[in-house]
Length: 322
Image 1 (cartoon, rainbow, N blue to C red):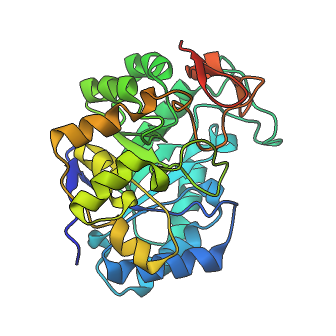
Image 2 (spheres, rainbow, N blue to C red):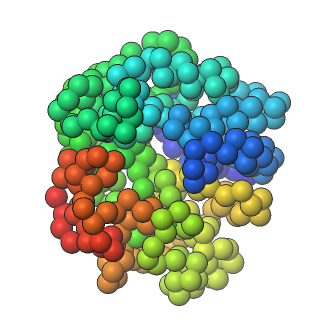
């Protein structure tokens, strides 16, 4: 089995540095998810990243159970959907039942925004209950159930972490955000590092095929040169950069060959790391590649200012930082 590095979290647990993302581009897709996870286990994957909102927790859990391997060989992350911010215990138990895998390793607040329980399309303003601080306090209570090892957040900026952390009895162990060479999140990573929070990169390969715009890493000459030097694929270079800077990466692929290459890391030298670190400084390059940049400056009902995200132009290019 491929030897995947483990990162120590601030609560004493360990998280595999490479996982398999289980967002299939749209909710559901249970058969595709099941087949993907089932194929990935013999390749060496043990870390699976799903969410209530993905609609495929049952498929992930079924593939894991049917592998016949001990539960403690696996690391399962799932997430609290926005309209369940006011009913954390019920939502967690529903996810646990769907996964049917004894316990959850990491439970994340998927987004800081809460939405109405009766009308999920109605997003609540930051100051309206349940606030993400109130939701976090309910997540902390889950740790006493014995069915959950770690809790964290997702899509949290420095601004919103600064609001949350003074109220925490348990510091988040993880913050999962979009992160790749076009959006390296250097400032956020440094902040999380200072608080003992491990960053996980979703969309670590730029999320091609899903709201993808801008540079394509597979065709960038600098990336290709590094890949050729190490006799690996460009994707391996990008994922190795992520892990080497101590971020967890959760790429998604249904292709068994790419599964094998994605989980096989290489070691980059300092100049190669710096080249990728600075790639986003090229003209028209620093951007989200996940389709979240909107001309009206809103993301799931909150303004960029409320999210603590930089303002961007209609093409997604950063034009102002908060």
